[in-house]
Length: 124
Image (cartoon, rainbow, N blue to C red; front, side):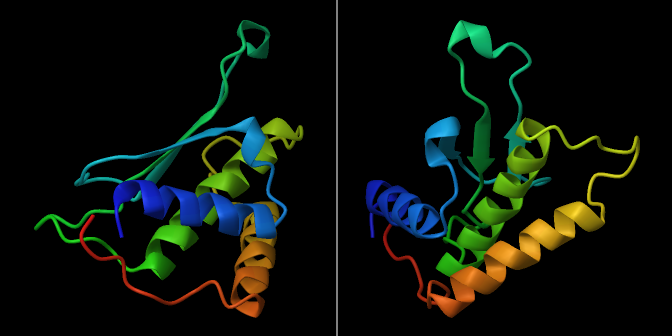
């Protein structure tokens, strides 16, 4: 599966989960020692700039994580977007509150129910 095919599969699955993919830009990035994914909100949406989700699907040795790991990372970052863009007030110092975990579990359960988890990504 190429990087373009991986991105296409992710977008298709996110649509099936009814996540608002048109609200964000999703990027697949090289390996990161620190992160699996990052969410960058936009402070001024009047400029036409969308929030960004960066996903780091590569292991240190260059191999690609399983599709399940990658999709769960994207869902995780999307939950940050849903909280941020829907007016949820985050308590300082608490990145993952009960509201976040409720969203995350909801979308993970739906993805599991729709048999989205599983599969290995090859030749990216």
